[in-house]
Each structure stands twice: as C-alpha cells, then as structure tokens.
Length: 267
Image 1 (tube, rainbow, N blue to C red):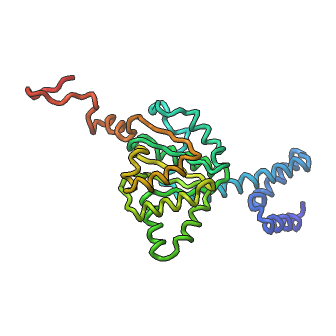
Image 2 (tube, rainbow, N blue to C red):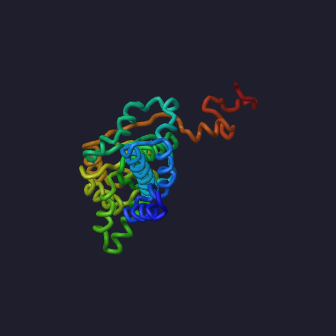
Image 3 (tube, helix red, strand yellow):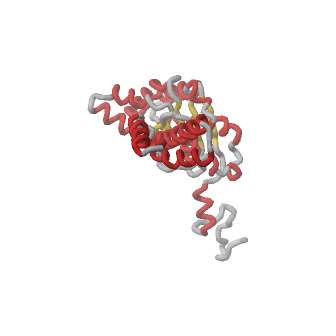
C-alpha cells in the first residue's frame, strides 16, 4: 500500500471518528497481508476493535457520571458471610430485567452488612448494560432538593433526577428527615414512579420509616410507591467492618464474657 493511500485511510478513519481503527490500521494491514486474510475477516476485525474500544470508553464515562463512592462488584461480595441473602435473587437483579418496568430494589439491614456494596454492584451492572446511573446519599439528595426549592428551580431538579434509569439512594434512616425533606423525597419518588428504578439502602426497618420521615402519612405514601413494583432484600448478618476489627483484635468477640467479680475473665 502506498503512503498516500495510507494517509487517506487515516483521514477517513479520523473523519468518521474510528479512532481505534486509525490507531491500529498499519499493524492490522501488515498482519492481513502476511496471513493472507480475506477482506471480510479484515473488516470484521477492524470493526470489532472499534466497537470494543467505544464500548469501554462509554462504560468509563457512565461509571464516572454515576458518582459511586467506590467501585465494588457482585463477584467480590461474600455471600457466604451473609447467609440471609439469597444469591439467586441478587443474580436475577444483576440481569437488569427489573429495569424494564422501573422496579425498585430495597436493601435493608444494620450498618456494615454490605447494603451499599450490593447497591453499587447492581449500579455497575446497569452501567455495563448501557444504563445511566446516579448514586447519592439520602442526606445529600435531600439537601440538593432543598437548595433547589430555595432557588425556585425544584421542578428542574426533579426532572434531572428522573433522567437516570437507575437512582441509588444510600443511607435512608441514618439521620432523621424533617417534614420539608420528607415532602421533597415524596415528590421525587412520585416523579420516578414506574418510570425509573430506585435502589435504596436503609438501616431502619420499613415499620420505622414513620419516625425516619417524621410523619407516618408521608412515610406510608412513599412506601406505597416504592413497594408497588419492588424487590426487598433484608440482611440479618454481622457487620463486615466489625469482623475486620475482630480479626485485628481491636474489639472483643460477642462471645467474650465480661470480667467477673474476682477480676478474671472466663474463656
């Protein structure tokens, strides 16, 4: 192939934004000539490399836009440590079928049992499936809605929060929510109802949400919409963080007996 022809091919690739093909073109052409590959094989190889490169780039962008606090996968989740979780249920959610109808996922349990890990892992699976995801804490979300209300742009903010196909809301119940915050949260849930999925984590049982939101009526209305199409996973295991501290000897095991009156400890 003549240098002018190669230059034209590079220019065409650049104009068509086939940047991966443009980068690998000389090497691929050389390999094709050496191995006497057919035109169709060469074309398939070139296009597949471009598709994979673009897919990887778009995934990186979706992961960045999701604003995950960390990146953890389902493969790294220790299901054996949390026997109360049915792995089949989680793996079914990982297929993304729940997203087709805007169904919700509620992850409930005490602190440290892996709720956020599962939420992020499901969010990452959604990103891999080409979905737009946004992750936020409950307090951060309500603060941003309150600010939007003060600035008279609440409707605009709610529209933005309905765009992601998956909205992850972490740590519901960690801090009590005032009445205004409860009303704003209700508006968001109503906007996303049957339109986009919500993955939510909470360290409070659903029965305690009346206290969390400071109003049983609002809490009931929120739960009515969240639970209509949803999967609820309640984790009853021990804290991962506590386990690590036990291993490091920073805290005593639950089985340890308090010192007796004689100043000795039972083993």
